[in-house]
Length: 171
Image: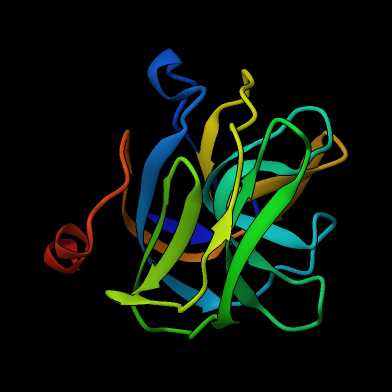
């Protein structure tokens, strides 16, 4: 699906079966054409679930424009309110990229094009809420925020941590 950077979003709903995951994986194929994540939210959810309380993300693969650059992150917020992130370098424009963020209930990992980013971090139980899973947009202060300018080819959510061999097979 193509996103114009202005107002396109995919709302995937809020399935009860994935409202409060502990061990899970999020997979995404994306081609960013313009890194325009400097809107009101200063970040764009490529694929994720936003938190209703702090306007942070419960979990997401996102592009972040807060630092003036356009890095891609795997973000998880736990029930204690702690935010855990693993980042990559800046988004590569006009190139299809395959991202997988995964967590086994304790440690989280980020893969880009089948290669681990090299970092891990620990997290607790994940924030559960009734917000929908979205692709291509992040709200800012309860209003429309920042939109993706690019293409999302495929997104998947797994209710378990994918193994390295599964990640390589999917890539």
